[in-house]
Amino acid sequence: MKQSAGALLYRYSPVGLEVLIVHPSGNYNRRAPWSIPKGLPEPGEALETAARREVLEETGVATADLISLGSVVLKKSRKEIYCFAGPAPADAVPRLASWEVDRAEFVTLDAARQLLHPDQGPLLDRLRDVLNLPRGA
Image (tube, rainbow, N blue to C red):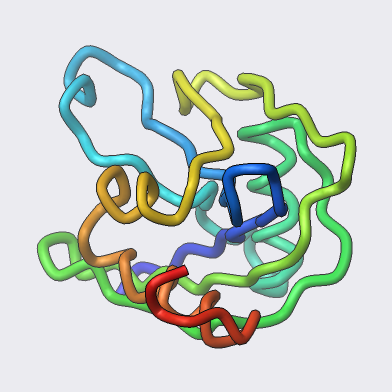
């Protein structure tokens, strides 16, 4: 099974908790769901290191402290995504730093649930649990 590593960076804003997600580029991805910033680890690269690198490569945002949210498996592609989470830097402004994505934005948890690939939805629940947020928050 192919493995991928990424991170769900979060911040608190006047509208509540927001997470950083990306949309894949290319005409064939116009209607594709969004994703956490992620990618394949380099040979011998630790999953957390790969997650940090991928977030920086795709969004231009550097990560600080990360914790593991475990993994999810994309049912159709059978790709296992290992996800880490951590606070985004206070001054983080995502930018398109890679040809792989055409959008990188902080969105509310509700918006993320609507935009993300459905198989990545459990990562939002795990983040809520780690941050001790009620399910309706």
